[in-house]
Image 1 (spheres, rainbow, N blue to C red):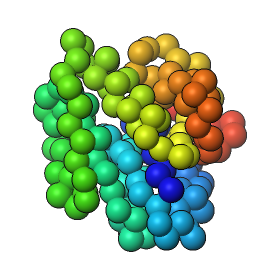
Image 2 (cartoon, one colour):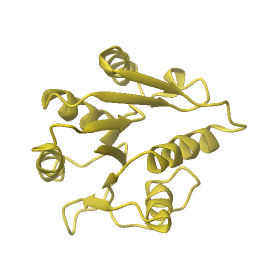
Image 3 (tube, one colour):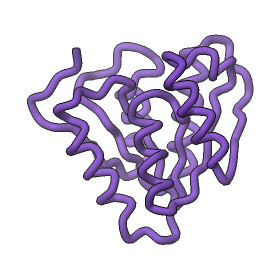
Amino acid sequence: MRIGIVGHRNIPNTVLPSVRSGIRRVLQGNTSAEALSRLGAGADQLFADIALEHGVPLTAVIPGMDYEAHLDDDATRATYRRLLSSSRTRVNLPVEPTHEEAYFAAGRWIVDHVDRLIAVWDGFPASELDNTAGILNYARQTGVPVTVLWRPGVTRA
């Protein structure tokens, strides 16, 4: 079973425990699972770390752009490099005209190659091409089962 992730970069501390336990719940018992992630800040890195903790092989899906240079900060880039080196497989996607299109293409690629998608999503509709909700909508349109993880009533800053 291939399981992918889409989610927010900034996850409030009040939501983190429920997101972590939700990811663990989906991964537990899936001994033949494979995890697909863009390895970006927030939900992507959290999911990848938990997958590796559970012995689930990781596939890094790298958007077609100067991705590492556009990660949030030095700590995020260091975690990205660590996770990338721990990945069983690396998929480098073709270069896209804009960063937003590259992020969205990577999210769509993940949806197109998974049996289930985890969405760390606050419930607000998409406002940008690479928005979590945009990928979530694409997954629903294509019939990929989605598990949404969030704590009701919590909004992002």
